[in-house]
Length: 221
Image (cartoon, rainbow, N blue to C red; front, top):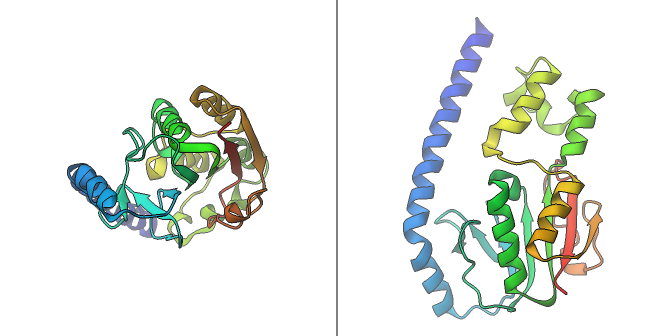
């Protein structure tokens, strides 16, 4: 009985959060252009864009999200409000897997357009291959599986279904799939990295989530 009550409460919580996110997204769509205009009027000097910042605010970066709380509202399906070749860095953590593949490629093309030659985009996200490995071997090793809200998970099949379907996930990537998206967007120079590691000092130590197992630095040539 307690399990049923817990699952019911969890479903209600997810429904409330989904409704809140839809309202927030609608408001952000209305404010998208005014925020872009306000940003341009401020004349900010930063040339580093942090996409999907949430509550993780990076100093010296333009912290952007689909929320009025962010410094700049951006949608991955819309053109970035920057001139061609003006950004030095773009960073996102756990973002691209939340949109369809075509939307992710559109964003990556925008990243390529707005980066200056030699500019770098760093992407961090869950790794589909790591998820499959855990499914086959030890599915309880994932950090999120042991969160109090997820202790109801009983089997590896339930775990992997949640990993694919929850949190708005729409397209999970492994290295091969991320390479495909990068190449379609015009990036041909890239290197896969370990968490916190980079050849670029200002891109080191940015990851905040243990599930960020697939990480790449892609350079505009």
